[in-house]
Length: 293
Figure (cartoon, rainbow, N blue to C red):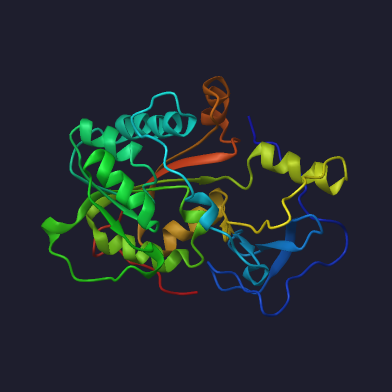
C-alpha cells in the first residue's frame, strides 16, 4: 500500500523564500512556503526543494522555554508522558537488547533513563533546563549535565568514556543546526554506536490533512496571543535520510507511531503516522563523511 499524498503547495502563487532564508540542512536557497502558523499567519515554514527539510523562518522568534515548565514524577505509571517514554523504552529493548553506556539528550523527567537503568544500562542525561536536571538527580539519583547540545564542547574523549547509545526524544526538531549537533553526537559515540531519535513526521497523514483543511479555510486554530513556534526544522523520511547520509551515519530502522496502540499497527506498517521513531548507527571511522553543502 502506498502512502497517500496530499498536495501541500499553499496555492498557485509563487511563495519562494526571501533571499535571506536558506536551508539549514543543505544550504540551498530553493525554498518555497509550505505552511504558516499564528492567528495572522505570521510564522512561515519553508520547504527545501533539494533535501525536503521544512525550515522555520527564525526571524519570527522562538519559544522553547514552554517545554520545561514542570516536573512530572518519573515513577508515576499513570502520567501520559511517562507512558510515551515507556513505549520508547519498549522500542529500544526490541531493537537494541544489549547493554552499555546510554546518554539521553533532553532527558526531561528522566523516565526513560530510569527504565533503561533498570534494564542494565549505565545511564546519564544532558538537559538544557537546570530545574529539570536538578529534579531528575534528586528523584532518581541519575547524573545530568546541564548544557545545550547545540553548544556542547566537542572534546577528545577516550573510547571507554564514550557512549554506546545516545537518545534524543523530540529534540532534533528544536535544533537550528542539525549537522553540527550530529557531529557532536558522533564524537560522543563509540565506533558503530547507535542513536535513537523521535521527532514529528511532517509528511504524516494527520499533518497533511490539517494543512489541507487550513488552506481550504475549513479549520483555523486559535493561538494564544503570546504564541511563538518551538520547532526550528520539520523532517520527513527524505530530509532525515539526507541528514544521516551527510553526517556519517546509517539508517537502521524507521517506524511511525501515535499514542494509540491500535493505530500503530497501521502506522508501523505503512509509515504514515505523525511521529517517527528511528535508530541510526555511526559508520566506521574509514567511512566517508560528507562535508559538502
